[in-house]
Amino acid sequence: ASPLWSSHLYSVTMLSLALITAPGLALVARAPAPALSAVRAPNLAMQLATPPEGYDGAVAAGIKKANMDAGKIFGLGLMSGAHIGFGAFLMLTVGGQCPGLAATNPGLQKIVAGAFGLPFGLMMTLVTGAELFTGNTAMVTTAVAEGKADGGQLAKSWLVSYAGNFLGSVGLAALVAAGGTLAASGAPVATAVAKTSLSFKQAFVRGILCNWLVCMAVYMASMAKDLPGKIVAIWFPISAFIALGLEHSVANMFIVPLGILSGAAVTWKAFLLKNLLPVTLGNIVGGAALVAGAYSFAYGKLGKPVPA
Picture 1 (cartoon, one colour):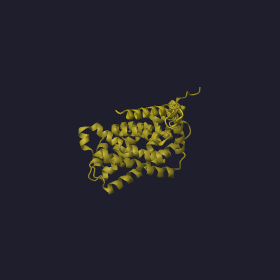
Picture 2 (cartoon, one colour; picture 1 turned 120 degrees about the vertical axis):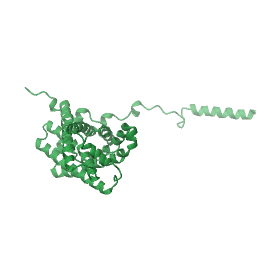
Picture 3 (cartoon, one colour; picture 1 turned 60 degrees about the horizontal axis):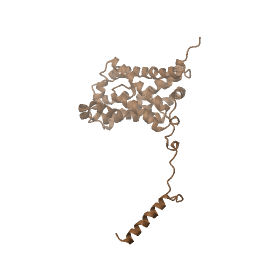
Picture 4 (spheres, one colour; picture 1 turned 30 degrees about the horizontal axis):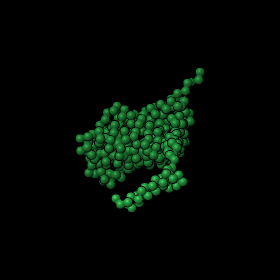
């Protein structure tokens, strides 16, 4: 290299080193590392209630539901029935139309059916404040367990929300049947036949297990203080109960009538007596005993010693 080129290269190199090391130049001075607390994730305590606080919140929600006017419960029950129906509609449309996957990888097909459908139905209900019978078996029962509501209010909440859910779900099933979007699918018919072929004992036990998970989803979602937290709390238990083959009374209020309207060899009497009745009874046990009763024992009156 020529002496002139070497001189220029030496000058540029020295100037670069001077710029890098000059303490007064803000453009090149390295900023101090941020404190650990500045980059730490937000405190989870701000996003999620503690277990005792969560139970108190569930009791407060139960009191509000217990004091609600019957007409309002019914209207919000209609909405929730439709919400859950839409979730079941999506489940049958996606997971119910994967026969190849069901034959080759039935576990994966069940996960697909669970992940796409019922979770978003419950999301619509909880975010909008609609009234779902199965959730009320736990939430309103907590208020009764703590002496904040009475048996009459419990009966009103359960019966009126159940009636609203039934009409909302069956009404949506009629609309879906009229729309014909699943007319070429055998999923509604096959599912309706399968559900009404269970023994009373099987349907009852599957109802217990199902609403244990559903009410855990409702309970945990009530503890979350932001929408993403509520979605996570809902998604996993609800997708699990579908993948596990459990029985939810309100979902069945859409699924089985849609099967009947689609030509399934199932009568309304068989639906009501062989499926809906035992599943509903099981759902009550799952929500009222295994969620409301269990957490009242853990954090409420049921776990406190009786005064002598």
